[in-house]
Amino acid sequence: TRVVLDTNILVSSFFGGNPRRIIDLWKTGRIILCLSQAIVEEYITVLKRLGLQDNKELNDLLSLFSTSPNVRYIHAPAEQHVVASDPGNDKFFACAVALQAEYIISGDQAVIDIGNYFDIHVLSPADFLNTQISK
Image (cartoon, rainbow, N blue to C red; front, side, top):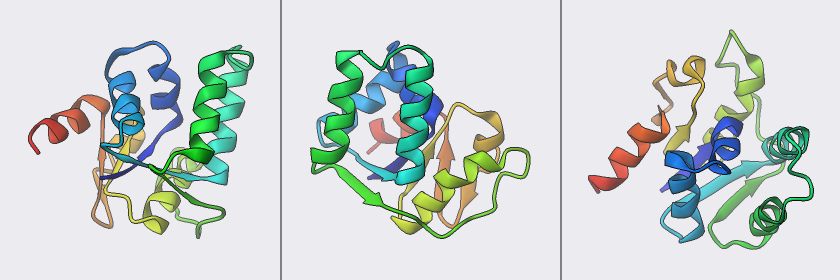
C-alpha cells in the first residue's frame, strides 16, 4: 500500500496516537511511503521550526527516508492544482499521482474534503487505519 503523508501527520507522529501508528506501519514495511523533494523539505522545515532539529528521532527518520526499502521518491512530480483554498497542499497530490499512491493521509480538513483524486483516497489517520484493519 503506497501512501503520502501530509506534514501534519508526520509532526503529530512525534506525539503518538494514530499518526505514530501509521509511521510504525511504514517502519515495519506494511506500507510504502511516497515522498518528493518538496515534501521532505517541508517536513524538515516544520520539524526544525518546532525545535526538533537536534532530536535523535528526527535524525533517525531522515536517515530512514534515504535508506528504507519502503520509500518511493520522485524529485519533481508534475504540478497538480487540487486544493484551491491552500495550494501548498498540492505537492501531496502531485507526489501521489506520480508514484501511484493509493492514499493521502491528512489531518487537514481542506485536504480530506477532496475525498478521492484519480483513484487516490484522501483519509484521516483514523479512517486510514480502519481500512488497514479490514485488509
